[in-house]
Length: 315
Image (cartoon, rainbow, N blue to C red):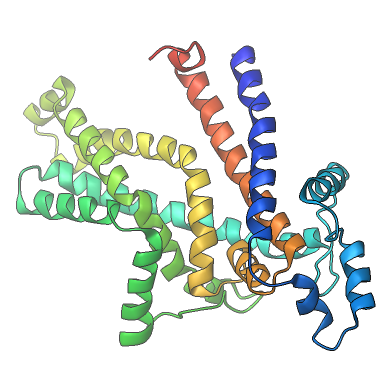
């Protein structure tokens, strides 16, 4: 297990390095000059040259990468070109909103998957099963941002019962939860269909066991059997899969925040792109990637710990 964990951790180094190179190359392809955005149209060429030198924008790409990695090793993500605020302060101010949205989405997935999957398994080969199965296949094929746009159109524009943007009043938890409903449901749909099918399969398997048949022969009510045996066993794989999917939920939260204009990592990323704020863009993408990679690393290590075949390279 130690060798497996060490190998997985060491793979993080080339992964992050390749991500940094790709990130710098991609941001430099964006049209426009961030110095012109920062200094304004009336700034002199001497002022612009000084700003470029200050942010190392006059250096070749590999030199800029060197300065970024050097500052990164010192815990410094740079300073925003737009307002000179440290990037780490900007990120830490909005990061909790993204984390809350991620876990709220996982809660909805767990709740809907257990309820719908259980009903599909209990009423197998009935219209309820067919309806839930069709719904499961439908949501698997639709991206979360499309679902988010549909939810906005229906519940914020056509029937304005839920807010379409913002995160609620600071310090008021109920308004914050109210603003979380639509974006979190949009993200939860990404894995809902898959997990519904998993719960259904587990429910059918448990209900076919001999001890369940024996309980029924003794006249034990079906509702008791479903709650004590079937539902509990069916919910366990959902918890495991949610742990493995944490990174994907985090990535989905970043994109959904752009649609719902929530103050989070996604909103910060979108604003940095529109203003060509390279340090904020690089810092936001880098930290998002770090969280995504670490979430998948923890999932891999957990999977390897549970299943010895994974860590020994066998299927």
